[in-house]
Image 1: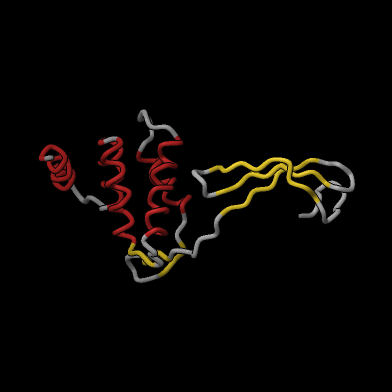
Image 2: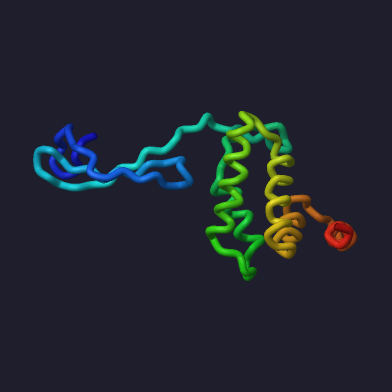
Length: 150
């Protein structure tokens, strides 16, 4: 690891800590030449997941895109950024653990809706209305009725 202060190639690790539920390691390092201290991170590199869109096109799984959709549906709701990020983390981890390399966008949307349904019913209905492209109030009503049938 190159020192960011002097460029020397050798450093020693002074502290290591597991972060992100064991998926990353934070290391404090000290340059053996100039003594400068800096932090590095090691993260597990997963095989990319491809999302098959409704039109048949493929695009790489984009956690930010999913997070933004969740955040829009949770606007003005008592849901923290951390809770929204946890939903994306859980979905991404589930896909990797099941060795899924391709997933249809509708299945991905259903996964998000399942997580939102357990977290906040209003956020769930908001997400569903955009995701399922409700065309009229009856489709909206049908979705609400599904919540009451539980």
